[in-house]
Amino acid sequence: MRIILLGPTAAGKTELSLQLAEELGTSIISADSRQCYKHIDIGTAKPSSEELDRVQHYNISLLELDEDDSAMDFQKRAEQWEKEILESSEHVFFVGGSTLHLQSLIQPFNEMPESDEENIEKLESRIESEGLKSIFGMLKEVDPEYADKMDGMNRQRIIRALDVWMQTGKPFSSFHSNDKIQPDENTIVFGLRWPREKLYSRINRRVDNMMEQGLAEEVKSILEAGHSKELQSLNTVGYKEIIKYLDGDWSLEKAIEKIKTSTRRYAKRQITWFRRWEFIHWLEAEELSVKEMKERIVLKVAQG
View 1 (cartoon, rainbow, N blue to C red):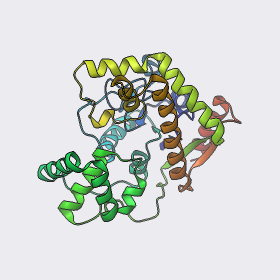
View 2: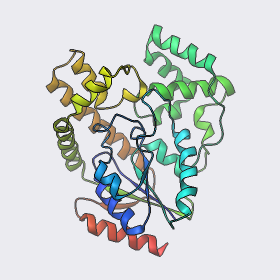
View 3: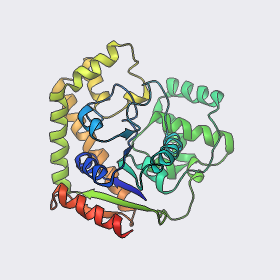
């Protein structure tokens, strides 16, 4: 069986997922659009070395910071990992909160063309001369459905969607089935839910913890290693704000507050997205212990 555990950032998926994987005798595939990159560890809440020792993880620290990645790339990797895991386990377990990655598991993308370098160059040139908002406006005109689903102005995703449209004349969103999203009979989806103010409080504490763990030092070391601050992988909440601080544009206090605000906004978008999925079995995380949530999931999985 394919099991998916989702929820907004800071919902508490990590410890529950570890206990579940141990109970079910399986590995974890991270459905996170940033944990797949090397070097960005603290700000992506990547599992610790101890947690990675407890349970085998996939899609963690897989790519270099300058490599491109997409939900479709993730989908293709996940298909291979799924086959590998099912050779030795009854269950495949996905955990994360990246909405398009999760959707690709429930409603796979149809095949679409490879990137066209000429189109990419044209779009990059337009960004240089007119800014990212210019091509985002273009995307909203040709594919408003995909633009509305996007988590903010993601440069890589905007370029990819426009490249597909330029090649095919079809909106990027059309490569997803128009059928109502519904998991197959072999997939069960669980979600962690918190009252909004409690979740926001958890987010604020998490950001403070990340700063204590050395987020600013991590970003500084990445830049000192020669990585461009313009990389799409660094256009990530936590990293882009600290870069502003390191560049002298913001005080550290302002950068921290901006991280908290941006993370809360991201969580709100995640919650809005997940509300559309009526098939999620919600767990009220404020009311239940990790042990109780684990037991409920194990029981539901056993029932099929």
